[in-house]
Amino acid sequence: MAELVFFSGTMDCGKSTLALQMDHNHRARGREGLIFTRLDRAGDSVLSSRLGLSTGAVEVHEQLDFWEVVVAQLTSGGKVDYLICDEAQFYSPAQVEQLARIVDELDIEVYAFGIMADFRTQLFPGSQRLVELADRTQVLQVAALCWCGARATHNARVVDGSMVVEGEQVVVGDTTDGTQEVEYEVLCRRHHMRRMSSHAAHAAALSADVLPFDLDACPVPPRA
Ligand SMILES: Nc1ncnc2c1ncn2[C@@H]1O[C@H](COP(=O)(O)OP(=O)(O)O)[C@@H](O)[C@H]1O
Ligand SMILES: Cc1cn([C@H]2C[C@H](O)[C@@H](COP(=O)(O)O)O2)c(=O)[nH]c1=O
Image 1: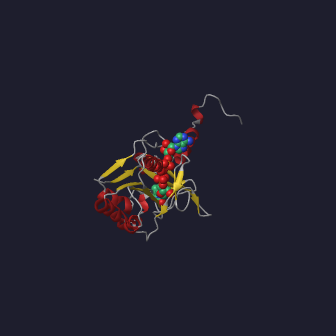
Image 2 (image 1 turned 60 degrees about the horizontal axis):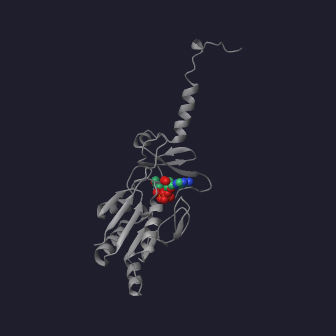
Image 3 (image 1 turned 180 degrees about the vertical axis):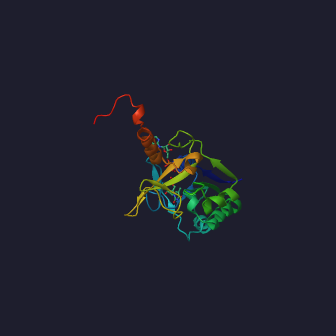
């Protein structure tokens, strides 16, 4: 029986790489699949991994209906054994429901990949619906790490070097709108809650070295 599986984890933990590997392994055994993504950092209609691999994909626009796409493929004589769905956090709840229907009524495997929560630690609507409907939610094994070395569990947004907790939910990574540079960094919960990105930690470490300087305790009198 087919399943809807949600592979989740922080940014940069290898989700897109796993999506490409799963597609490769299925294809190598003669199975045929459809690949979908939305707002990949490499551009429209591409599923890309930071390891350098990429493949063409169907861009999931707001109006895309997964059910219609798959049924059209089947009725035109195509074979569909599985779907690979990357950046699934950006899909609408209705689109996630279409994916569940494809599993149940067409017996096609659906593998969805995405982050669970945004930079404010709030669930993306698409991810929430996936957790609600998936047969299984699987956290990726490869841990992305916080700057302190702990397992990273949260995604932080850094705008012009400072961590922010307000703003639009969706801003594609590694972009600039011409005025601001938006980056993301993964953190452990402790440092996310303290708003301590690696940049802030570095600045705090530097000022800790400089500020507590006690002239009276200094063995060498400073030169005039
Ligand atoms: N130069 C590198 N050498 C080895 N592994 C790398 C390198 N660059 C990135 N990676 C791996 O790629 C992972 C990110 O892959 P990607 O599939 O793009 O992540 P995600 O889709 O979860 O954001 C990193 O966690 C790391 O394990
Ligand atoms: C936390 C967060 C992330 N995003 C964007 C940034 C990236 O384009 C994707 C995640 O991609 P990845 O393959 O998992 O690295 O999501 C966003 O728009 N809003 C956020 O809060």
